[in-house]
Length: 456
Image (cartoon, rainbow, N blue to C red; front, side, top):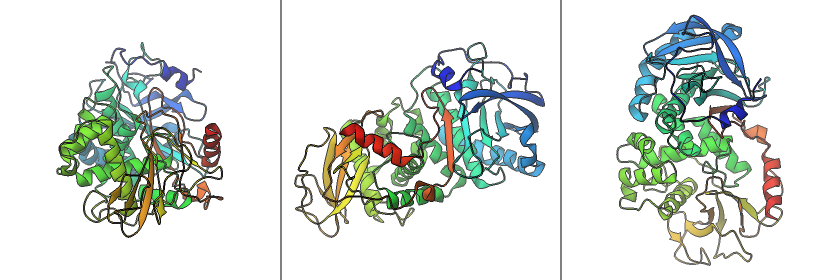
């Protein structure tokens, strides 16, 4: 069978939009076969499924082999949540879907996603595959409809978390409608994922506690500065992009209206965010849509996570509290590594200037617990009070850019304080697009070693 990763990489976004029925069995009948992605073998395979419920905005199919995992009450709950909450909320805040098959409905396929889950470890809660928005003549594995894949083992369709996954993946579908289906440039992955994390909040109206908890546990264990900009499909990416998009909403004068404008922006990279923060956030009125403004915004957000003041831009205005402070240190080689916009923070007692050459895109500054900033070397020797911190950030705007050396005040992190499995909340929500088909990375130790070896 043809490998789906290989096939998707050859997908022509300019191919004709389909007008046919949904499902490999054809015509949207009660029983049909759908193409689905095996995330382990990276191949497409066929799923036999039956239509269980049809609502105003959705058609719910359940994999025949997984029918024992759900009942009529649960399926009707999923349908009602989509029709009465998810669809109206998400389309209102992000825009309309493509409706490539012309029936005005989204197919929700509930199945046991082949993600390698065997009782423990991470699993994929759901995904959107852009292949389905094209005709079979253009892509043999297309189901020729607007659809979302949703896991039912170990995910539970009766839970709010499941409905949040639906909202997350529905934003991906809408995003592709506006930023890919017509052959235009797709948004950078981190923006697309940030909007999907925001869609979960828009649906639920409450914060994703698992994302915030994971951020805290990660800082306690690693504090390597990892975040969403250099997207590696890791859980820390999902956690930090959620927090960043909440920080934007909290500081926007019109709340979550900023999300729709980011999606509709003519920019598809960091400039889309800079543009809308300029237009929606009073703290950034008048800034230019430029790299320097993006550096300022990211620096402000990193400082906000560290000192989290109750007022002003250096915090979350009391909505998100109790954040674990970053305590970055050098690795055993005497330095550490930062990918684009990874920012490492360490507390300091006096001025600091690196004694060795650091990366050309690495920028240092110092700040204190009151939000005062020192941008001159040696950083932290003047104008600051209270607890003082050093921040080193890689300001390369290339989302695929290389890591660069960062030298922090002398200290060594000799041992990882926690194993990765101890801070693993187990849930991934992904979308399959050209160039983004890999499973989430879990072996942080091996990846860290590889990065450091490459910098020698």
